[in-house]
Image (cartoon, rainbow, N blue to C red; front, side, top):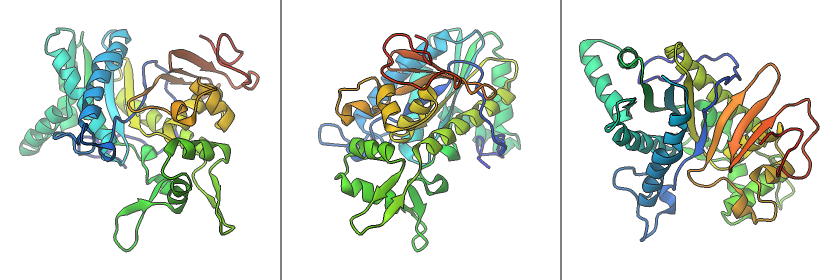
Length: 341
């Protein structure tokens, strides 16, 4: 069970795949500390992001995240609530909250609760014997006509590198997480070129042939996509249960590879290399230009669990998928039986 603001989880363990309201979505985290350089050092405030990564995350918050809030129905709640087990994921969301708080300071129609604010409330609540989730709900109720942003990224297990040993697994000797054999070997094969690795992963459905004759089975791309969607759906349901009388949008922050599979699944209903190239919208480009970029969004996700329909906004396209339509072939430019623009 996850922890909600340090308390027991409100996220259910039952399978769920239902996001009926628009505006929810995913982003890839911003530039990680491992990409730091002399020109772009590690941030002094967020130790798993670079300085440029923090600045870009602020731009994303004050640009497309704010635009999503503006377009949301009146009284909407946005919960920036989903992160992975990698620090850069949660830190990206925290930067968003601080940037949006700056925007809200000059407005009468928007309330933003940052992680820092909620942690302070949590400390005060412990001293008084109260629960911070109740305090958050009280603030929301006290602003009945305003839109509210709650920024508190929670670990969502389906987003995790270590979920079912997806990309990392626990070392029994040290107790620390280390790359799986599949992840290590595919990175070695392509000299740490993640874009080339992603293309291989998608082309071979997670299988990797080694020089010694063994074939490793890594995570299947479509399984990863479905797991992410389930995680976002659970996050949505938790937020909706917290404020059932308001429109709800949730935001999850994940990773390259995973989100390449997610957007392909939402756009086409299945994950393979051809559908990925089609969904990325850059069929002639090198793989480096195909993969989801730092801070890039997979937006306006809606899912109907009964019909299997889904919608997603990606790279300036509004894509609608229905499983009863013909399989995708060709291009997403213009109208297609599975896509509405």
